[in-house]
Image (tube, rainbow, N blue to C red):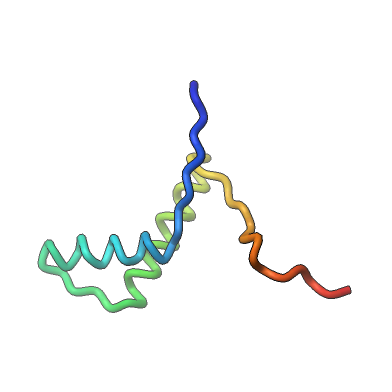
Length: 63
């Protein structure tokens, strides 16, 4: 099976959920959309569909 690199941004996922829910007549708050995005991300990790990589822009912990 071919491996592909997929980048999943939870902010983008939250915006997608918000737009999809709004288009179907549901108006979630921003917090609810973010929670749904986090749940979806955790589900994808659990099913080994994605691997979590730490953001390279984050500073390393100080010693």
